[in-house]
Structure formats: structure tokens, C-alpha cells
Length: 237
Image (cartoon, rainbow, N blue to C red; front, side):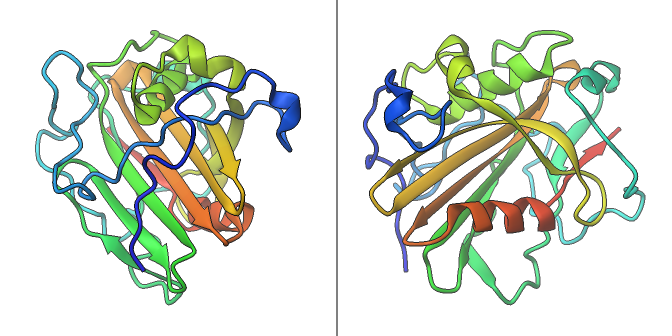
């Protein structure tokens, strides 16, 4: 089953959040998958339209979580101030040999790829890369993560648009299912279609990751728990 997630939600912020099941939610235009229209989605550099990944090479889907990652690691928004300027972040690929998920789109060479559940009800889109073109706030990874959410939402969405509707969540970090990395999230729904975007920026390194989960007829909450539990973020110096 093949589908894209662009164009199905209203391209506007819903102020009357009381009408939604949870507070802090938005309906907004979701970006097309990087290769769904035959064109690569540029990395977030509004000045040039594209930028390299933090390592200076096209990103590849990592085949395993690095052995040096520790299950005791934590990374709050405040901890981000101590991250090396040379660090870069990537997703550990826990779906590489998972029987419940299959590759939807392979690595696009620009930091993005996606997996789908076998029944096609949920798609998880991963992105990792350089954030040097975004309005990051030094020492404030929460606000910088909102800037990355705004980029993922696309159009003319700004950090200020996102912040009132975003909430903080924990996602996997280091080895295993250790849920100890602060991230920011927005979500929306339209009938039996639900989506969420989760992002973490590391301002000190101008690097970050985001995750879009798109479910139509599937369980978004369950998909999110499985995705972030099996695909932790790895921070490399």
C-alpha cells in the first residue's frame, strides 16, 4: 500500500483546540514524503535550499545502534547546552530486521527514509541532518526543536506558530528502549487519519532529527510507542 501524507489536513492553525481530543494540537499542512513527488526534499537551509548532513556526506540508514551507546544515558533540553559543536545526531535503525515493519522508501540521500507497517495502516518517516539554516536559539533546545517542527510542517509556519500547540515528550536515546531524550511534538487528526511530528534539535551542534508518523485506520499511539522504543536517537561526537 502506498500513500503520501501531504494535502489531507487543513493548511491552517486551529485556535479552538477545545474541539480536539487533546489540547496543544494543530491541523497543518504535512510535508510530502521526500521522494513521493519524484523530487528530493531539501534539508532545512532556507538560504540555499539544501544542505549536507552533519557528517558532510549523504546520510545512510544505520544498520544497528552503536555499541558505545549506554542504556543509562539521558539528554534533557537543558543537557543540550553541553553538546559538542562537532556532534551529530542520527536514528538507530531498530526496524532493520523487524518482522512488523517493511521499508516504504529507502534512504533518499538527504537524511530521510521511511518504514510502513505490513498492513500499510501506519508509516514512519525519519529525518536526520544539519539545522544550520534554521532559527535555532543557543542554549534552548526546546525552542530550537519547535523551529524544526515548524520546518517539518512547511509552508510559512514559524516557531511562534508551533510553540503554543506543541508538547514535550520522551523518545528513545542511546541503547535499547531507554526513553530519556526530551523532544517536542505536535499532532492532528481527520476522521480515521492521524499524524504526529516529533522533533529534537541540538542547538549547540546545529543538528537534529524529526519523525513523522502517519496512520490511517491504525493506532497512532501504539505506533509511536513502538517506533520511538525501537529506534533511539544516537548522538555522536
